[in-house]
Image (cartoon, rainbow, N blue to C red; front, side):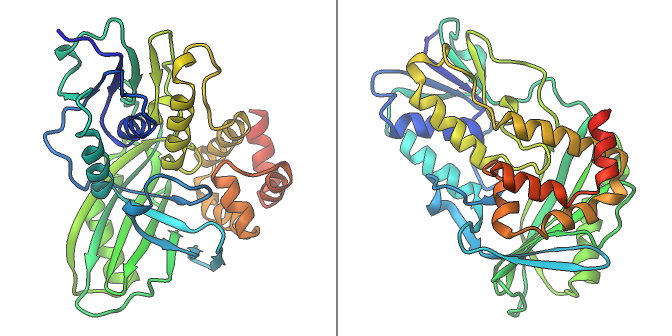
Length: 355
C-alpha cells in the first residue's frame, strides 16, 4: 500500500481547513497527503457561525454578515450592535466546493474511504474524528435547524436573534437561534444543552414547527434545507503523541461554554502549517488556559442551575458588545474578563469555583 507524508483523518471542517492551509502555503509541492473521509459526496450539511474577530480564508463562503443581534428571555429582550466584529455564517456547501476545487489541482493529494487503504506507519497523522467519545452522560450542545422560505418579505434581515429563551426549557437549557438571510429566507435552529441520553429532548421537528407557528406567527413556508448536529461540551480524553496531532473538536478547538469552533480551527490550521517542519517539538496549540478554566466553572453552574442560564446569558450580553464578543471569541483582556465576571451571580459561581 502507498505511503504518505501526511494523513488527515476526517474530511470535514477541520480536516479540509488544514488541507487547504497546507495547499495554499505550498507545503504540498513535494509532500504527499491522504485525506480519509467515508462520505460519498460533499453537499451542504452545516452552517458555521461566529463573530469575525480576525480575517479568514472563506469570505466567499459567507452566507451573510450581521452587525445587530438580540438575546431574549421570557421576561425581557436586549439588543446589541457592533460594526467592528460582524457576526458571520458560512455555507458548508460553498466551503467544501472551494476547498475541493483547489485540492483537486494537486496530484499529491488523494482521498480514501478508509485508513486501511493506505500505509500510515511513517506518516504524520492529523485526526479530527471524535472516535469513541460519544459519551451520552456528558454535556452536549445538540441542535436541528431548517432554512425556511416564505412567499412574502416578512423578515428584518439586518438583525439576528442569537438566543431566544422564550420557549419550554424542559428542565435543561433550551433556546432558538434565528438568522434572517434575506427578507423572505431564514435559518431557524432549536438548540439544547444537555446530556444525550434523554431522548425526550430530541423532538426537533415538533419544536421547530411550534416555534415558527406560535412565536414567529408564520404558517405558510417551505423548507429549503435541514441540518442537525451535536457538539461536545467536554474535552476529549485522548492526547497528541509522536505520530498523531488531534484537530477540530478532537483537538480541543471547541469553546465549551458556547460551542464555537470554526475560527479556532482556522487559527489551529495556520499554527500547524507555520510550524509543520518542527510540529512534534513545539508546544501544542490551545484556545487558552484562561478560557478552559472559566468554561469549566461555567459548565458546573450550567449543570447545577440550568434554570438560571437565560438570565446569566442575558447579563453577559449587557456588557459592551466589544467586550462580550471578544470574551466569547477568546480575544478578551483581563479588564474585559473582569467586566464579564462582574455580571455573573456571585454566590453560585463561587460555589462552582470551590467544587
